[in-house]
Image (cartoon, rainbow, N blue to C red; front, side, top):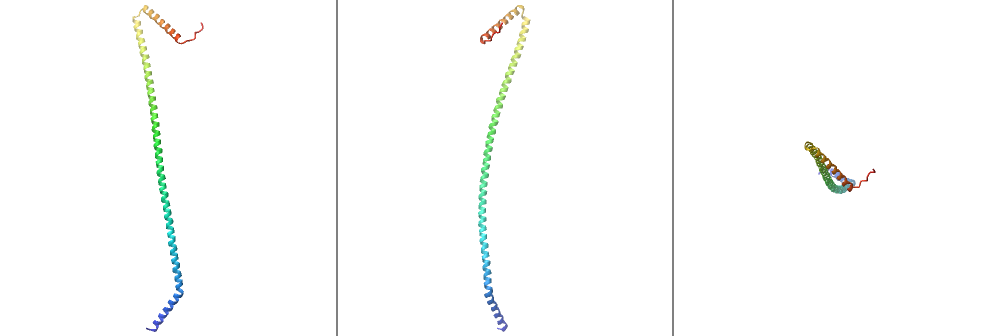
Length: 172
């Protein structure tokens, strides 16, 4: 081995001793510090992960509660709508029944009015026909008999009314 090579080896050994004496503790300290930072970062990440998992569970619970509340509200709205539907149907049935009764009453009144008018017209036609027949066939004696019979009928009717209802007599 040559002298310069041996001096290089000695030089390299001295450098290693100096580095080991002064640089070793600093490197160890720096490695420990870096190791502590990494452990701390891992611990923080673990804590954040557990917090995130807790928040996720909380949000999922809130979401399921919201879904249950929405379902309950929808069912309530459906029940209210069904009740309103039944109320409207009942009201419509009552109105339809009232309209039908009213229509039946109007029809009955109209039929009665038509019957009354028909009776009046038939009576008027019968009276007119009787007048024509009497005028054509009746003589003066017949007219006198009819007149007396009419007066007698009026007196009987007046007497019957007087006995059935007491009408105060007018002073004479």
